[in-house]
Image (cartoon, rainbow, N blue to C red; front, top):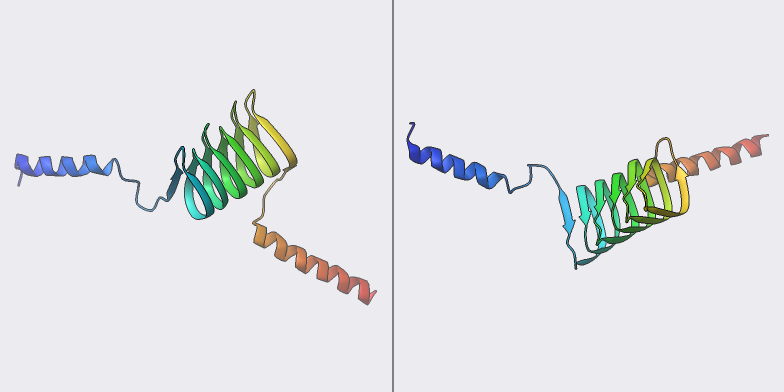
Length: 153
């Protein structure tokens, strides 16, 4: 019951668990020198140290110092050390580090730019960012209501 062999087996097993991600976590890492083109969906965290031309929806985005990303990006938080370009919507905090550069159509709730960080493009502060699909549905219904109001008057 309390033999040393069993304790060693259990400790070996627990030390191996340290290298495995937590159950239920979905992390994507695009390493330095890797180029990716496509979609990333349902990721808890995305780290880009290579080059990515993507449509992405994630909780946390990290673009490393060697990372370059472009495309349509939706994230809760984004930490940019490298380059990000495209349609970028951050519902939490967008952080641009010292050597970071963000350009394109940028919408964020909170912004932090470190000394040397760059931001360029169509920039919009939003109290609460809506999903792209949700906002287009509301625009469609509001435009049809205003047409009906104009006809009935």
